[in-house]
Length: 160
Image 1 (cartoon, rainbow, N blue to C red):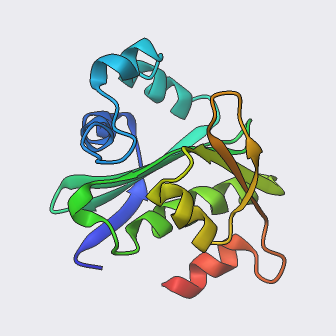
Image 2 (image 1 turned 120 degrees about the vertical axis):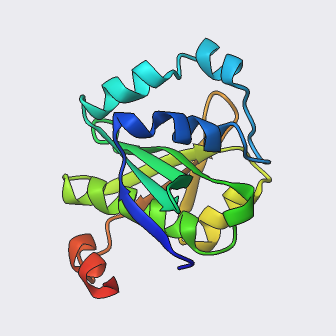
């Protein structure tokens, strides 16, 4: 896909991850606000050592998208793609990688949240996620069950 490679994220990718996160057009949050929310490079790097995993989409050495999943909560913490790379299937690839990892690590149901009436909410609905309620922060909670017909790791092998 346009020379875009997907790989596991590391602490060295944090600058690129934060650049993507603060460059999106929907759900834009400034670096200062992220810091006030406790979302810092140090916290993300630490989470990679404590049951979280991330994936980055890289084109010509530049991170153009990322996802992060938390094993303990069985949730997708983040999924963002630079505006110039939207509508290319990249978000789905990143979401599939995060979901498959959670399922491979024992999750039967994976969940995430997003604001209502957004392109993100419509994306999750089209992808088969079910809205299961509204969180205290007024975000919609979406859930997806582990596929029963084909384990995620096998599905990943078929894509190669």
